[in-house]
Length: 214
DNA sequence: GACCAGGCACATC
DNA sequence: GATGTGCATGGT
Image (cartoon, rainbow, N blue to C red; front, side, top):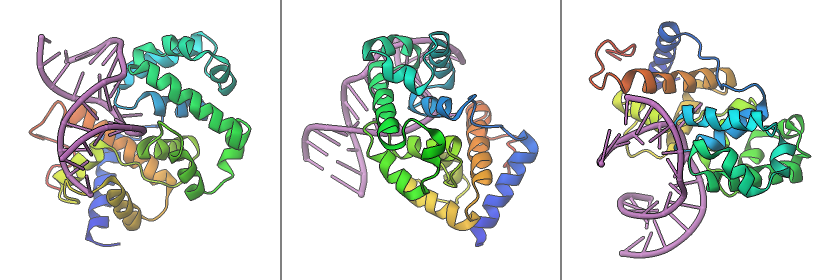
């Protein structure tokens, strides 16, 4: 582990101790996590919750449910999450992929290795790097670190990266420094998002931030 | 009423 | 490779 790794560990420990474990991802089943990952693309989580509640009330929060729904009906159900026509198509394409490749079975999908799954997910139209990685980590418990806008903002603020780094470069750096550990990646990403949402946004000047001085 | 939110695909240079 | 645009709702 290099100097950056030591800063990452310090950052992780401080966040964990001050904020506490985040128990991510919110969702009662791996499939719900996957749906949330697609619906939250460039969208606030409160809007996603409304859409997921609608799906639950309609009894359609399942692979079969979504597969059986007409795309326009699905779009109406998930409307609060925004980009609803686009996301209806993306959900439908994911469940098609899920049945074609894995019989709609999370355990079967989980039995494949990380890198082949990532490649296959990225071929699904509407699933990009962050959505794929969130699915891999939070629904399938694969050891991959999720990079999002918060991650890059916080890391570059603390001089671990420059703003120019690609998401993949950031991911490689973190995984190289911390080693492969799904539990750490899970908690770390959750803590960074929590910090970004509940601290950075309200305190842009960083007064009293848990990471002050780092 | 602007601005933002846990992206992604696609066009253009 | 870098940059710009459409997609849409609901909260601040």
